[in-house]
Amino acid sequence: MTCVHLRHSRAVPIAYRFMIATTFVMLMSYPVLASDDLPKESVLPLSLAGKATQASLDACNKDGYRVSVSIVDRAGVLRAMVRADGAGSHTVDSSRKKAYTAASLRRSTTELAELINKVPTLQALGKMNDHVLMLGGGFPIEIGGEIVGGIGVSGAPGTHLDDACAQAGLGAIGAAPKVPATK
Image (cartoon, rainbow, N blue to C red; front, top):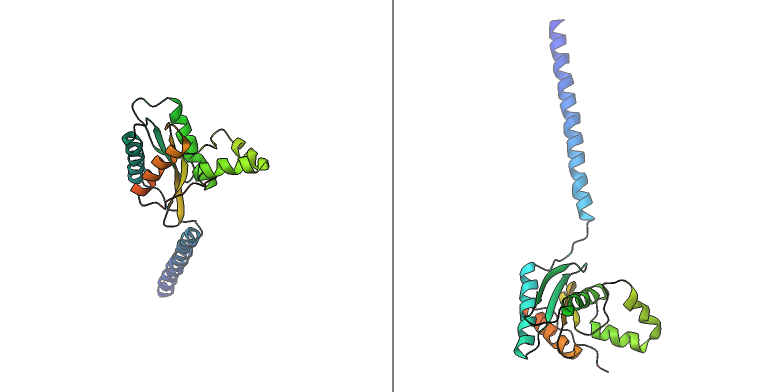
């Protein structure tokens, strides 16, 4: 009777261990499967945002324009911002809004401004929220075929000049060049 009791007591822990191990293995595969369903997104590194900001500021400064430059990520959240000495205080907000608009709508703000002037039914785009500004000087930042953010420049004496300074920022980080629509 003692022999049977020992053999029986060893059998239960082995079966119990097998159930635990099986359950553990089954649960381990679930997170792996769930992570495969998560979207993969490229992120604009802060180092590139800073480099683009400085290149845009330098381009405008070289021509004597005192501007603000803003960089946002793909969600429109500010990544980097700089205001040149002597730039108007309004340029801070307008550069951020231009960057937000370009990233959100995935087009240059010059192109969008011209589009809403040509197609009056699209004017509501400019009133979607308080962060949108349909004024030239903003471009989406596209790297490797993916929009990773937006750049906005404000304060040069003309939106075409804001565009040129923003283009310098795009060029400095190897982003796809954007050509604003022409009339």
